[in-house]
Image (cartoon, rainbow over all chains, first blue to last red; front, side):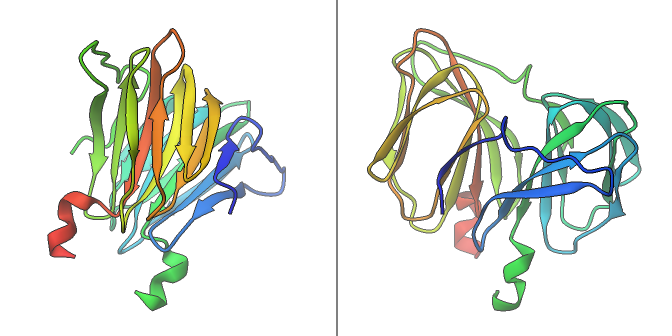
Length: 112
Length: 112
């Protein structure tokens, strides 16, 4: 696995749906870039065992964690602990790009 | 624990040593901001069980992972897998600010 990347050039927007671009992963975590075009959302959902972190890399929108929905912009960072309802909306007129960490990595859950 | 923060205002530089500012943590991870003044380093070291990610938030320097030391700047992201030697140097003349994830959280290791 390549160990040096840059988030600036990691970008893919689609009018179809939110795009997820994988950067790194192990059994312990995955790290992706999410790209949301205007109007796109990651619907509120929860993970029983996994924590998630969102860092806004570019653009603005809103992040929901439990019953707390807040406007977010570049450099805002949000923690959705395991079991909490969370989601993202791009309610702006420009692209919204997020760095996302999830830990542990649910793709390895059967072996844990 | 506060779930919304911003990395822009999370900053503390010291001429004494590299500063670590805690943002979020759980059993699964911790997420800190590291601030290195010019000339400061995080010496090469390794963790047997924990993965680490560095994202450069501001400034420039160099990151070592195993035998690969590379110049890094804002928006570069680096993955140091468990067991790999890794470290950071601020060889620039300005502050270097990094977002750091470590997973799992070594502070909880006795209970794992």
